[in-house]
Amino acid sequence: MRTQVAIIGSGPAGLLLGRLLELACVQSVILESRSRDYVLGRIRAGVLESGTVELLERAGVAKRLHEEALVHDSCGIAFAGGQLSIDLKGLTGKSVTVYGQTEVTHDLMNARAASGAPSVYEAEDVALHDFGGTSARVSYRHQGVAHEVACDFIAGCDGFHGVSRRSIPASALKIFERVYPFGWLGLLSDVPPPWHELIYANSDRGFALASLRSPTRVRCYVQCSLEDRVENWSDEQFWDEFRRRIGDEMAARVPNAPSIEKSIAPLRSFVAEPLRFGRLFLAGDAAHIVPPTGAKGLNLAASDVLYLYESLRSFYREKSERGLDEYSPRCLKRIWRAERFSWWMTSQLHRFPDDAFGRRMQETELEYLFESRAAQQSMAENYVGLPFEPMGGS
Ligand SMILES: Cc1cc2nc3c(=O)[nH]c(=O)nc-3n(C[C@H](O)[C@H](O)[C@H](O)COP(=O)(O)OP(=O)(O)OC[C@H]3O[C@@H](n4cnc5c(N)ncnc54)[C@H](O)[C@@H]3O)c2cc1C
Image 1 (cartoon, protein in one colour):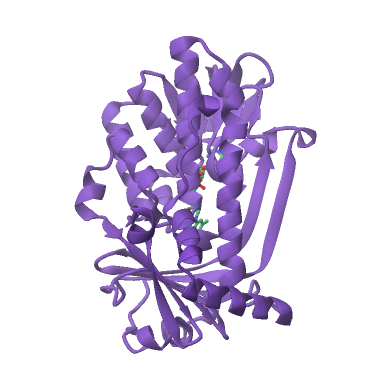
Image 2: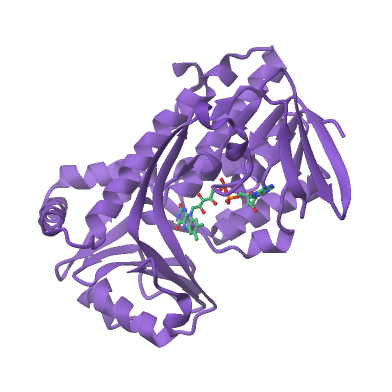
């Protein structure tokens, strides 16, 4: 098989890139190691920046999003018995949109299926070849048969544990990493949310987040130990702990609703530089991870994809390599800003073991946030999403 761009991974990054390229008449093949149902069953992000929504509109996959998504003009911070509502819209003119990553993936998969563009699910032993030169190859096995795709470029959109980043020689990558000494226990439940905005809580017992996915579905989290196991938490124990952390204003309204999913995710900050090696381009979680506190992971994957799409379109239309050369530095500017914000949110809202000085810093920082419009504006500006970098730096 021959194609212009071989895309590794059918998560939001790979699917969105495939869709944008298809609209620009650039061919692609998506190779995904898991089944379609497995990819759709993963419960992950849920907060979209307005720039991400605009990109989904541009990709022609935002119809259902506009019918079903919830637009939030504010988000809440609970701390020391008080609750602050950050007026995102008033402070920045922008809102955020609550629409599950599962739904984004679903809409993109449907659009790809309708277009007839090729995707291979359950592709085994995906391996990248010859991408240091002027073309590349990807090999894989499907239903026991060996296949190979010859291509101009490979887009490594296969997440943190994928094969793409690992295929680049270690000496060509610089890795920046921080692993946090705790995780998030998340619970999904089909119950109408008693809150009208996301609430991020810093309590003496640790962090909690009241979130939602739809008018009838809540997603809530509590900070937990890395050694903890989902089996250790009954639904009742989860809700009891969540009530103790989320603040008095909300606690009385929290229901004891049964879970439909519970999982534990570790928290990590990670960046691999650069995002390009020859004909291989990394995008999304393949190149960087943010702790979910700032709701940036999916949004950052979307901005990488926009930049990669623009670079490839310019290569095919104008025979220009400039966009490809600029891809990595252009991505990294926005990545590091999102890394900073996600690290800041994580640092201010969680309990860190044996850090009395850090606790005082958190108290001081959050008191300042509660009192200062300038501090709220800075947080709001980052939360709704910083602007995309234009191509050519203009
Ligand atoms: C548990 C969890 C909770 C999260 N919660 C939030 C949140 O609340 N807010 C937020 O903004 N972000 C959150 N994130 C982050 C967000 O979901 C990711 O940033 C987003 O999924 C990135 O999209 P992606 O397409 O780059 O990667 P992925 O979604 O990881 O997609 C990569 C795809 O590549 C496939 N793949 C992997 N290896 C191979 C291979 N060798 N060959 C072929 N295919 C392969 C995978 O199966 C997967 O389908 C969360 C992440 C996790 C794991």
